Picture: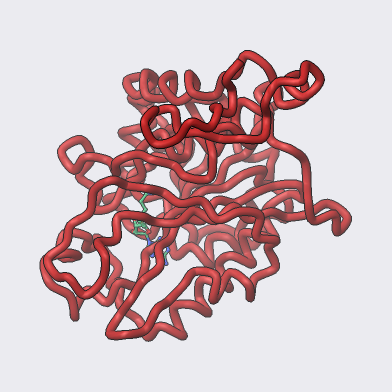
Length: 312
Ligand SMILES: C[S@@+](CC[C@H](N)C(=O)[O-])C[C@H]1O[C@@H](n2cnc3c(N)ncnc32)[C@H](O)[C@@H]1O
């Protein structure tokens, strides 16, 4: 099926709040500036979102480390206070379009520029979201040419939550998801497989969707900076609807191509699904007096003699 005519929209031609749950069909891809396009989405439509925004990496002032991450129609270099305020505005619009009880996973990094540290929590605390968790993404690989600091190979993923009736804690994850820990280890997508300058690896949005959405009900997944469409592909293959926004026509085309051929990426989704399994839930383990309180990275047996989380 070619989805182009049915699903691709130009943000400028939409009315305010025109995108509703009922009009989504399989999903919608909307080309335009994310803040103005979010305005075209009705309140409480989204169940979970995941994104990696541009990082304001001041590309003009840097060397080869970032020169490969140059976007199609966007200069990733604005004054930092302006950038942070814009992110607050975007995150608050995402909050409005997310249903109470919904979550948003925001991938960013701690940046250090000419002696100033910019931490994502600096602006996340200014948004309406409840910050539920800071996840470390150990990318295991990163370019480096200078030794000003220890080699930074990690990024962060913030789990943001929209409470129901001011109950900030929300519901528990299933044990098979919670056991995946707060450190997500996995290399970024290989540039040979995906020509976008900064794509997600498919397992990342897949992990979010599998962990947060109920498998019985079809949910709505948002990525307000969809790039090459990784989040939409994960949503589609997992049986959910998607909303993807990007200002680049070229990246929209990449997303459409990927969605048309999504089945070819199914093995990566199955690989991720295989990680979300446990023989016994936390509750069952507790009732049988089995260990639930300690975690050991079973990849490295030599480091500790602590029992593993799921050891019998
Ligand atoms: C880090 S990339 C996202 C990559 C994506 N996760 C993927 O897997 O391909 C950020 C994207 O944001 C888009 N972008 C930047 N500023 C934007 C804006 N104001 N509105 C909409 N899209 C924007 C860029 O075109 C780029 O594709």
